[in-house]
Image 1 (cartoon, rainbow, N blue to C red):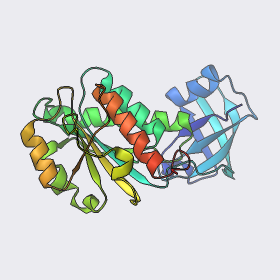
Image 2 (image 1 turned 45 degrees about the vertical axis):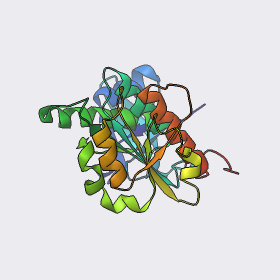
Image 3 (image 1 turned 60 degrees about the vertical axis):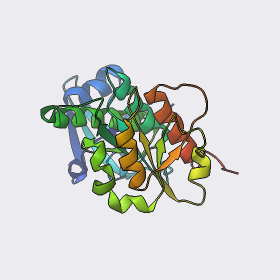
Length: 250
């Protein structure tokens, strides 16, 4: 049976005991139906994971004793794949962030583009929600560190804002670039990669020009038309595979 895991702030692990309330307590008591003496794990965004044992329990409050570091393998990706994804409409963005976290993206950058604009007043709230989705997906998939969902970034600012990251290949998924290389070939001999995926309807020609002039390389996923959220997950999986994260790349 899989050991239940909860993501908690690191400061809550400072003492040998912790108290859980609200949704965390309901999850342990009502959903999992755990009782005193049963164990679960708590992990932090910094990668720490500890064993915990329930000492007192009600539907509203759970008290647990921290037993020490959990003896678990490090399942986090060893290679950094960052995905810059244009903000998608409806539930598509939520789905994409969930799956990117499961597959192994290290960071996710929501992009504001000419064809999909997000009001600045909504950025902070949306980013917080997407971080919650990524953290929950990391918890369920066994990752020790959830991917970081970075602030919403206008696509034109991407090369300048993340200049330090351009030492690694940044790949622009371009369905019109029929002569471009594949994702695995583009990341060959690299130890990290960045992926840029436009919205439904694609990026504008001007946005592509700015990214390509900034150092991005065009890549192509084949002749079939993929939805933007599907393309993001497929490209991320291909990059991780080429880097040796999803089995031997050879």
